Length: 115
Image (tube, rainbow, N blue to C red; front, side, top):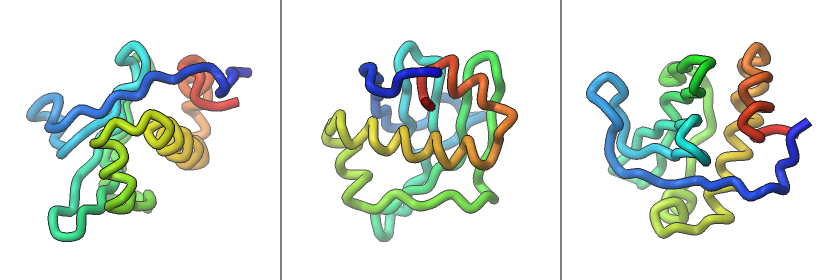
């Protein structure tokens, strides 16, 4: 099993990666093999995950799935560069994704996102 204690590099990027993957910001993990895309609610500053992509495993659209919101303070932590906050959010969302899609367990293990 993967060791979550190892350093995960989580980077915040404002804007969309492409026109086919619209979002307000996304998180890039380690060597750019994992992407979590988020849409921002500009009225209250919250955000929700709209897509998760794992190289070699595919992309899951989550716009119509019940995924918890990021609070405005969590979004601010991502933007400000809080590495611990980014890793915590990444781990939380990976647990949620794993419960939604057990068939992707190999992807989570390969990229060191679950124990």
